[in-house]
Amino acid sequence: MSYDATWQEETARLSRVLAEIHDQLDEARATLRHRKGQVITARASMWEDLPHQIQDFEDLIEMTQNQILLDAQEREYRQAAAKVRRLEKMAYSPYFGRIDFLEEGAARPEEIYIGIASLTDQARGEHLVSTSGCHDCHTPFKVGPNGPEPDMARALSGHPEGMELPPPPAAVGPWTIAVTATNTAWSGPWGVSFTANLTPDRETGLGEWTRDDFIQTIRTARHRGRGRLLLPPMPVAAYDHFSDEELEAIFAYLQSLPALKNRVPDPIAPATPPVQG
Ligand code: HEC
Image 1 (cartoon, protein in one colour):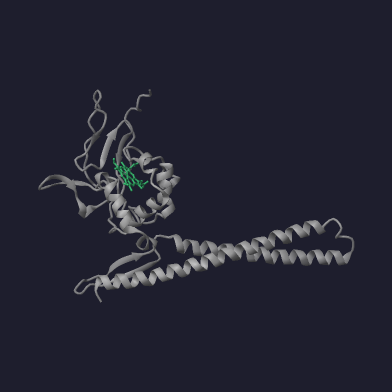
Image 2 (tube, rainbow, N blue to C red):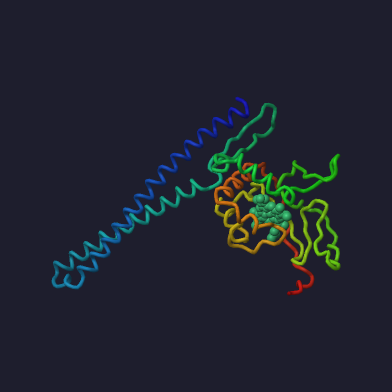
């Protein structure tokens, strides 16, 4: 079977699986609500009965039985909650399937991961990425026949690992920012920042990120929405104007890119802290 046919068939199959997971999730959430209601009612009625309950041995037995019932209901509630968590993990993880595609004559199969990333609106994401300047900073520039241009073979893989850099030039007068020819290492009052690898490589890129990690990074200007603050010149304030759906589409597109292994260095703090005011 051809690459495209395999891809289309697997995508269709996995989108059916995803729809099934979502149906089950709806059902599991309804069960969870029901169980929660039961536990709340059982607890409330136990407390109501309590003052006039323990008057004789019969009451004590009744109370113990109620307690056993409540324990069982709480156990069922915890099981229902665990099921919801399991299904949510499947429904919202960027990948839940893998195709090992062996091209004729190739020594090793190509591993293609499929998940929401490949099932949501990638084309829209691609359009947003290409019109929002992501390549300008996250794809290293090389010198082509018409001058410097993004090296699309390394699309969105960030500042190239292992690139030897001398210390940045001192800022003089009104000239405060310097950038390497690759457009990926930026020196300014914040120190030196290196553009991130946005491809889905699991170790060096966004392969382990969830959709929410990505959205929260833009919303909070923090790594995965909870780590350190992002440094300039990443235009997070501008991108905060994207809607959740737009960010979702961008993330879907990023996750569909070939995963490129490229470990971007950590930023370097400024030699002297920037002068305030
Ligand atoms: C003007 C340059 C510039 C542009 C344009 C730009 N970025 Fe960035 N981006 C950076 C830099 C520099 C960093 C690293 C900041 C740091 O280390 O704190 C970064 C970091 C990020 C991070 C955080 C990665 C992490 O591990 O926390 C994400 C996500 C990101 N960029 C996505 C995008 C997307 C998507 C676009 C286009 C819509 C984009 N960037 C456009 C410069 C840029």
